[in-house]
Length: 181
Image 1 (tube, rainbow, N blue to C red):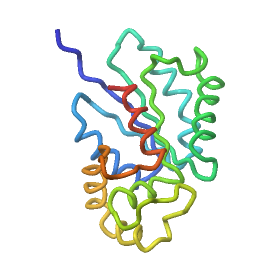
Image 2 (cartoon, rainbow, N blue to C red; image 1 turned 180 degrees about the vertical axis):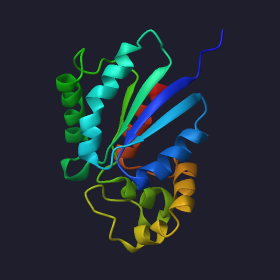
Image 3 (cartoon, one colour; image 1 turned 90 degrees about the horizontal axis):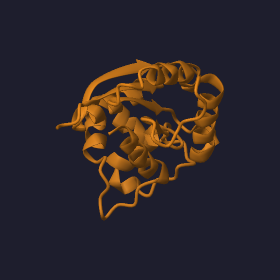
């Protein structure tokens, strides 16, 4: 018997996330409908998280549902942002903390998703520094001119490559997404 396709809700911050995420989930097989929810910024994602977890848990009889939370680490760093997400679920959602088997994935680009774009699209910028703000860099400004093309290139380079050392937040995101496959 074949497994039903996973249906996802994706919470995210802004248009840079949007462009990347829509292409990523379109390219990844096994996902049925994906509902993208733009939350304007990190506080919007955090404010919406508890409600979406409650909605997911209220339909737990449907094993093919999942939630993907995409939020920049900003100055907090990857582990502190993940701890914040875990704490928000525990505080704001019925049923407590995220359980090991729950289809809830945290995708946390560090410092921000622009770092991933530069890493994935501009080989000469590697290795990227996840503590550096790439928004003002010439590499990002050039990519931003055609965000659609940059998103396509970044998604095409999403999979790990044997000759490329990826930033820890990117590797962690790939692992997290396995929770919703």
